[in-house]
Image 1 (cartoon, one colour):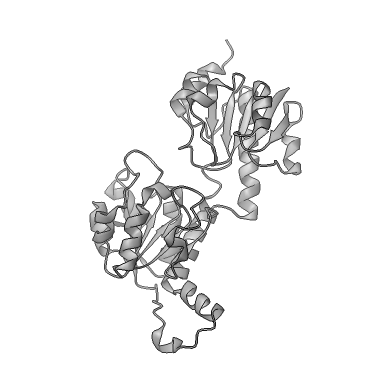
Image 2 (image 1 turned 120 degrees about the vertical axis):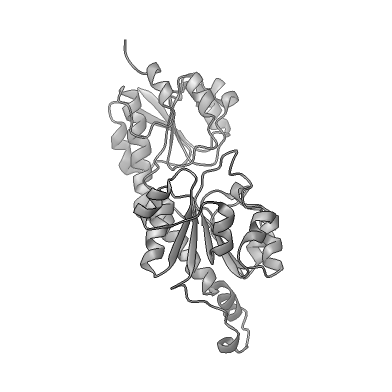
Length: 325
């Protein structure tokens, strides 16, 4: 029987997926003493996005065969180290698409309608002329700039078009013809998108090319009075530069579901601004998606243990370690 360690407690209804294969031997962060006491018997880790799985970690868990993510991002997993050690890495890229896209649109409405400002005003008992002072804008006819047109970016683009927005996209991995097929205006460069978009939404993974992408220079290239949304990775954005852009009035608002680091420090000034709507990296989480995350992560780990190649194997080069001679 294989030992499963879950970074979050596994819901009881999914334990049936382990029948005849393994059992849960613990549920907590992999940095706890409980984990290290059981580390020699851990074959599978059902991982959240909180822990770092590098070569040093893997060396201390000698029986480890699978790291299966209840989510998309594997930026905290050393794929090269896992492959070298014969550890399969799986994720669930399809599960959070709808939820994250919907959350992106929710943030867009919140910041363009300036809901945080008026909510705070009512909470604090302010008495002012809301009719004359409210700065909400109508999004129909505005241009949404989608940076990164993977699963989530494409879904956001479809939702935005359905709301009557003009959608422009930037993704160097797509051809101009693919933009035509997606019914999205083609931006040859990120700079051209930033200059035209009223709302910019980020949908990129964290890589050496994208970390720090939205710095002071790029934020300055955005339209005066534009809005920024980030439901991808906090490391894409220079938070101090965003703060400066908001304080100067160059940008009129931001919707942030992700920060660097996470969770953000309570003193982070972005959390205390009325023109920022912040959520704790829960864009992809709904009751439905949470169940699907668990089902996908567990099922794929079980498949690996049974010698069945999972659909979402992040490091396919590792599969030779699991093939029987």
